[in-house]
Every structure is written in structure tokens, then in C-alpha cells.
Image 1 (cartoon, protein in one colour):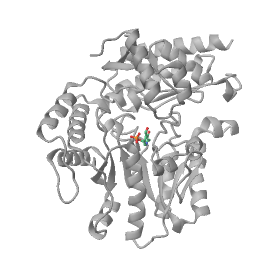
Image 2: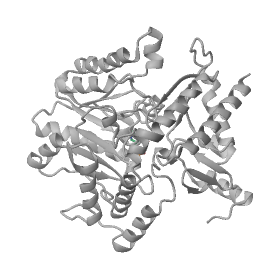
Image 3: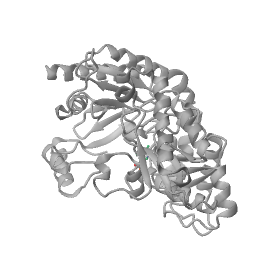
Image 4: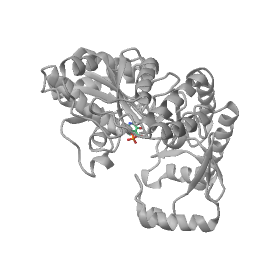
Length: 457
Ligand code: PLP
């Protein structure tokens, strides 16, 4: 274990600022403040280099579903490192961990999924999807079908295809967008439906209708696929109205378009079913998986390929010229196997659906009485609190005030990791949380909201 002292913290911060370019980070700002150095973790808690204990309400980065320090995952990695630390899965070779994981994934995913293509991350998974759906339509004799429709404010990764599929302007402005990807508005009732006095359900149908409008604008014969997260995560835990996804499915079916569910965050129990598409009651053709597949202990991603696409690739496609050195990495697969078996053993999916998810929803709903809170949403172990300037009129703060960042700073200062997306404060804690830990998290959230309110007045 690292010796934790202020001296070592300062040394780490200096070296970090000098040599380390971080993801999604303003480095000038980071150099001024110094990075927070996280040195160890257990269950749902982290410790920083100065010995502060922090409740990790974001599961690392939406991934540590089984919590930190789980011995079966550690043992699986150690065993596999000794047995076969690496071999590739190209050129007609395979190995037991990848085979066993593929078989287990076919059992825990919806029945249309009998095949998996392994990648190293969620972004690589979505890159694979872009190539795979275009390949599918080539095989099917409709090569004009190239366009993939996704949503503004969706997040699908940082590779060129992942960032293009993502609907984040800040990303598109840096490096552009690959051709034949287009976006529609997200189903954000608070922003678009509420001002027009629409019920959530009516708004859900209207928002899904924006997909049909876009398909007709592009030309149905050119549209290959629609991709979306069942619940938008990085965009701010946007839980769609219940009518939204079934209507999206109906529209995709009407035009024969492939439906892709990006399950990188929602997969592996977070929404109270194994996959978010089950919670939303839709049947996608493809699913992107990552994060919760290993609970983040080691990197692994993949694409679950439904029978419609798999049959075309296998029976008619010949060689698919695509793959990564770490596709089906044996250590990652061994950890994923141990992780999924642990989720089964602890009955975590049911725990989220029937116990801890509803309890989190109940405790989150109580925040609605807070003067700063305009809307509260949750789904399984994901929750969001929309901060507002005027509760009665539901007016938002001026973005320049950065109220979300203010609140996040109070969270950091009070031993809680919560994320700010604009003025939306979000959580996605480990699925192993107990009711007492939910209470502890809620007390911290309320304290941080109070401190934020006090600072604004
Ligand atoms: N898709 C979704 C929904 C995500 O939330 C993320 C990452 O947060 C990704 C894809 C990209 O995954 P990765 O960071 O593993 O490349």
C-alpha cells in the first residue's frame, strides 16, 4: 500500500501535472489545483492519498457494479495470469476463458443474442458496430444503407466513430464527425415536454417520432441503424418516458432499420434487469457492452450480435476484416466470468430490481422538497437531480454560474463522489449497496445541496 502523506501527495501531483495528459481534462486548471490522488478502495468507498474516505456514488466511472475488493475477481485474474496471460483469438485460435465467457453471455443476454464479438472497450465496441452494420447491409445487397442515427447528448465513446455517434458538440468541434452519422434530439421531458404541458407519455411518443422524421429526411433506403443508450448516462441520467423505446422499436421495424442498444452503462444489472433494453421492453439487433462486464477491474468490451446480423455475417459474409489485439483477452475474460458469476451468486439483478433500486428511488424522490431541486429521476441504480434557480417556475440557472460544479466541489469536500452534467447532479453507485449505505449517501447529497444553496445566497 502507498504511504499516505502530504509530501507524497505533492510529489504525485507535481509529476502528474508534468507528464500525464488526462481524459476530458483542462490541464491548465488541473495544474493549478493538483489532481486528487486515489490510492485504494474497498466495497463502495475510496481513499485518497491524504487518507480521506470517500463514498463512490459513481462506481468508478459507471463500472464497479460489484464494488471494490471482490476476491473472486482478484483470484480469477491471478490464476489466469499464471495459466495463459495472453493469446490472441485471430487466425482460427481460441482459448477457454473467451469461449466460456461467450457461452455465459449467450445465457445472460436476451435470447436473440447467441454471439459476441470482443473488444477492449465500449468505444471499440461502437466502432465495431459502425463497421458491422455497414457490412451487414453490404451483404444484404443494400450498400446504400450507411447512415446511422443517434441522439444529441448521447455518449458512445471517444474514438472517431464513438465520438461521431456521441451527440456532444464539444467533441464534434474537436476533430469533426465521420460521414453518414446524424443526430436527433434526446427525449428530455423537462426541457422539451414540460414547457408545453405535455404528459411524459405523450412527450415520449413525440420524441420517438423525431426518429421517423429523420429517417424520412435522410431517405429510408439510406438508413442502416439507430443507436441509443436505454437510459442516457453521461448525458445526465436521462430516464426516457415509458412510451419512448417501444415507439422507437416500432419505427425501426417499420423501416427495417437495425436497432442498437448501447448497454455500456446500463448492462449487467444497473437498471434492475440484466440489460437496459429489457427494462425498456425492446428487442435490439445489437448491443454494445463494456464497463460492468468486468466491474471495471480490467478493460473489456464487446458487441452482442443478434441472430439477424450474426446469420448474415456467418452464413453469407466470409471474412469480416476487423479485430483487436485484445479481442477476448484471456485475463479480461476470466475476470468477466468471475464477475458475472458473482452477480448471479449475489442475486444482484433482483437486488436492484426489487430492493435497493426501489429504495434508492424512494429516497431520491424525497429530495424533491429541496429548494434547489426541480426534477428528480432514477432508474435502478442511476439517479439524477436537476438543480433549478426558481423551483416554482422551474427556471434553470445561467450556465455561466456553473452551479453544478459548485455542488460537485461540495461533494468532493464532504467525502462523496457525485458527477455534475451542467446543473444535473447524478449518481450511479455500486449495485452491492445496502439500504444503510443509500441512507448515508442521501445524507451526504442533502448536505451538499444545502451547502450549495447557502453559497448561492
Ligand atoms: N457507450 C456508453 C454509453 C458509455 O457511457 C461509454 C463510456 O462512458 C462508452 C460507450 C465508451 O466506453 P469506453 O470509455 O470503455 O470506451
